[in-house]
Length: 79
Image (cartoon, rainbow, N blue to C red):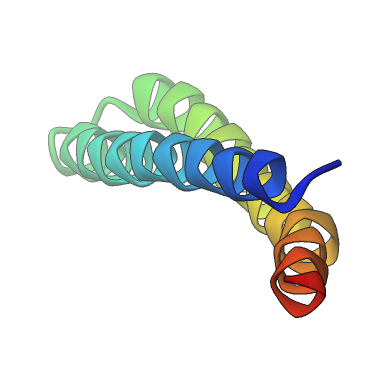
């Protein structure tokens, strides 16, 4: 893959992580509010979703750190 392709992939991962961070904040707040008003079943479901969003964010981080970043660095060194 060309360096430009890797840079584009890295940009897409960054954009996806921005969405994940927004979702993490939203579900975290909703979960806290549900707990505050005693809606434990709702809080549990929101917590499950929050956990999934955090896992997705970790997957994106791993993808960037253990693959795409290396391709960008390799491409920059070859130029």
